[in-house]
Length: 639
Image (cartoon, rainbow, N blue to C red; front, top):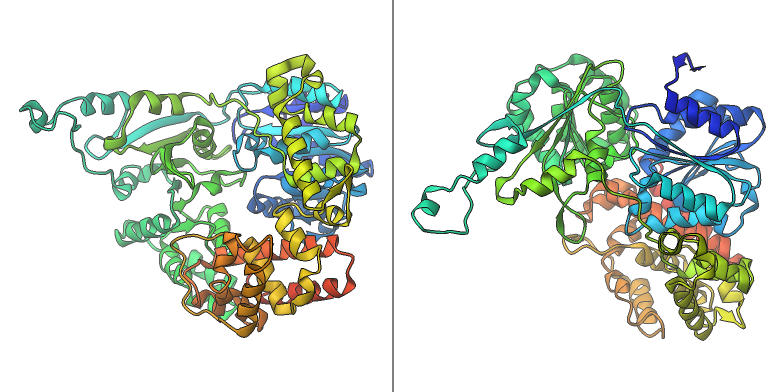
């Protein structure tokens, strides 16, 4: 079969045949093998039929990339983007959105999805994510019966079981299409400070040789010492295998490593890069060039060396991505988010370590995380083979565990289903008791435990649901298993439902002026970090008054998030007064990308409260808040 000038592989043909038969499809195939062509087929077919297609992505960066790609391929008028803080062309035939937005729409039975034929879940293995996995599960559970699904992932070891679950709860056939052959063969090697580029077996042999002190009976528990491996020495050893994506697990590490490599002066400057940067930034705000990250990038990018992470300005990430896409970068140091969906392959992938900090503790990455990164090695049509080099810190080396991670992707899809207050409120709003009982038994965990009898079995979710109902009744969100006015409000809030309801579905907000309204929403959104510094706070009378009101309120007085209220005035006060992002950045140690993310979260929460309230005065106040945040972002935020 020919499609878009390409001869399709059998797995692509099989998937398209299943789609033509109106089945849902799960496609498990290596990165770079052409899974997205199947999504393209659905989109092109259903645009002609006058139907809508939803494309969901796990991260906003991927949503933005797909928006640009699809706008180029299908015309901007045919593409819509919904990411919480951004809503563009929401009635378009192709709707790109974060998975959270799709989940919210199907949970609330939004009329906007009535004409949707297929929903495409890119990176469906995110269902394993401990924090967000339930979003994918609920998206599947609450999708209307007429919608079919295309689920894409590099590997799903238990794809057949996952398909049987979807078929069971949705009542239609689900076809599994698996493809295991990479289009570009992959060679995996390891890098040890003493051995250089080597094999896992040779590192094990060396690490088992006792050192002198061990042989003499001293320090019996101490392994043979080896200095940490050097990223620059690794690059020197693979200069014939560039370009390279070098995954580094800290933003500071990305920038420092790029700077260290540039200092070696191993690469000649490329005038094309300097010209490109100058043209790209010629109309950018003057503050862009004053940022430390920009100055460093302008210094090192001409030598084909760059870095990329979430703390950067969108325009600077775009500069790096476009230079990389043009093949002008030799080495790109980046965090692991660059591996998620964004189509940026290289000949070689280097991985700083198989150990990573996951926000709670240091741990060995799982096989799915590893293969997500390794899958970026080898460019189809450009490289005959791809290469992966993994740096080994011998003090933390465990042969058996390392081999298990890199040998095969053995991580099955697991249920992370958990009830939220929003889910409970919408279940009560949309369904009767019998329907709720059935829905609570439809999660993947229940299927794995009970199989075909899942609906007849009471699960822990049934008991959790009852506890939530009791709590919500006590707080006035439910009465006799029906939503009160407060409950109707909170059903349209998708996180921090109770705290938002207590502040904006009661008379509390009537005591606040516009600045205090913006500040309290910001306090709800702000995620405190121990190392964040605020250099210039604004402890105004309005801020102290709001702090007093929150400390004396029956529900908020013990909420720790409001302890940071005066700190975040460093960002919110100048934003309210009309300052731009560069002024805000001088008041805090937060990186510019993090400030943008924070302001986007505030916009998303403002939008939710505006949709939920019936008070025209509050709507007007929130509109003013929204305008001030948008004004702060207008010159630096790009889709």
